[in-house]
Amino acid sequence: MVLHAQLSAALADIKAGRFQQALSALTILQKSHPKTPDVWRLSAMAARKTGAYAQAERWLETALSLEADNPESWNALGLTQDAMNRPEAAVGSFQTALQKAPQFVPAVINLARLHLRSGAAQQALAVMKPFAQQPQAHLVLAQAYQQSGHPQTALELYAGLVRREPQNVHAHYGLAVCLIELGEPARALPTLDALCQAGFGPAHYPRFTALARLGRHEEALQAVRAALHETPTDSSALHGMAQLYWMMGRADDIAPRFEACLTESQGAVAVYAAYLDVLIQMERFNDARALADRAGALHGENTWLKARRLSIEIESGAADAACELALAVLEKGPPASELRGNLARALLMGGAFDQSRALIQEAMAASPGDRFWVAMQATQARADGDRSSYEALVNLDDFTMTAPLKTPDGYRDLAHFNADLAVVLRQMHDFTAAPLDQSLRAGSQTPTDLRHSKEPVIQAFFAMVERAFTTYRDQLSPQAGHPLLGAIPDHFELAGAWSVRLQADGRHVNHVHPEGWISSVYYVDVPPQVAGSPDHEGWLKFSEPPFDVAGLGPERFVEPRAGELTLFPSYLWHGTVPIQSGERLTIAFDIKPRG
Image 1 (tube, rainbow, N blue to C red):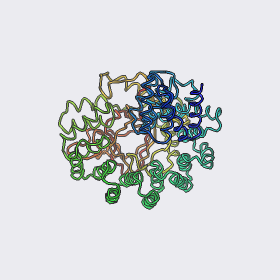
Image 2: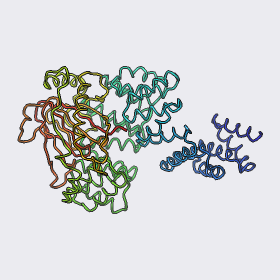
Image 3: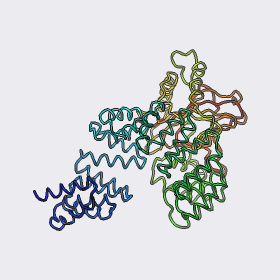
Image 4: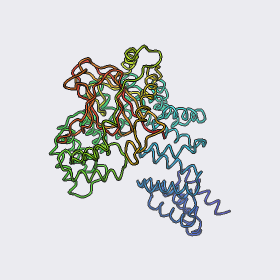
């Protein structure tokens, strides 16, 4: 009974933040009760709270040597390893906790949170779904639904949490973010205003997004400055600030704001990295080179800076400089995994095919099925002259389809349907400038995912699309291990949908869609001069990589015709030839198997 009371007192001290007091008492208990696992587990808990992670890990190992089946100790070990930036080890510990006690909710929540932080939202969702009836799991379950592209389901979970726990700021925050994603920024704004006034720092950036979507641009800029005041190194806020200035036609304001952010953050890496990304997106390559030199003088030539130096030369089309940089990196030994993409692109540009091939093979082994790397694998095969391997991945005859959609009920023909659809879409194009971080040039893109629109004409469009995709899917022949044919789904869902409006000189640079399985473009309205254009003006093009490789131009062009839909693998390089005048209005979407 005395030991129980002492452990209870130590736990109370930990919960009250008296960590050193708890450690002092527990250190005595370690000597008097060395065979009691809870002594070591609580000691580790207190040590972790003080930042003594290595000590906490050793004490947890002692606790587990005495009681290997205790899920609380495995869970605590996972938290400690996570704090030590060892995510793979942490995942293993959380999974072991669940093997010992499959219904141990804390380990489920911690494992899902770790997946969410690493961007593996689908894995988080899979972990959380079996615990949907557990109220304490609802917050993380909602976050998993939200990050995996299901904001409506997440919204319902957040709303339930708000009703049960009115003081839960995270539930209010999640609810507001979902409303923005669902195209209702006006409904989200009062909640975000209240959260900001209450001192909840994370609400500043979504408040900025809501204000920008509402066209209240000056207020939005004030909100993003507040977000950066709260967290000067917030990458989303830094990019969002630049994005808004750019789309308002105030590009000259971007550099001064970033210089101010560098001063305020004392030259933080995150600010330099975001600034470089934006300069590259703005195609201000000389400015980016000068900034990279400044960053290198302050921080050294680290991986993040090498990646951006490579990106500058790749995006500027400087093949020799890009390849020279890549070879210099390889001379110093195996590169960091995050450099592989830029290194492979640079080596292909410079004709160093042996080196690029090895990198692509490593990346494919590490990330099988990754859409970007499938595209790179196809590019490598084409560069090598290996038509058999290339065509196994890129069979344009069998893997692409262009066909008119069936006119929906209530419309005389597709022309009348497209006219109504065009009116609705044009109202949704809030900006005249293209987003900085998209493939789009000289045009605009709808900011809200069209899947969530309640407009009847858009819902009718998606019904038309489902029929067309079913036809496309049924024409494919299964083939085990193939990135397109290896998992032809019985059930599928849209992974994202948006509209693009191209104007004079408007185009898409070549790209792939990493989140999709099948991608698409539907032509709502096209300029008359694109019909039969000998220069393929405004036409879709396939197979040309977004970096210069000798001899690898487009292999097919598709003439855009209003009312037609083109479907193709998401890993297939695609872009458009610029239009010279008029407007090209489309809807694009990605499709993925329903998990």
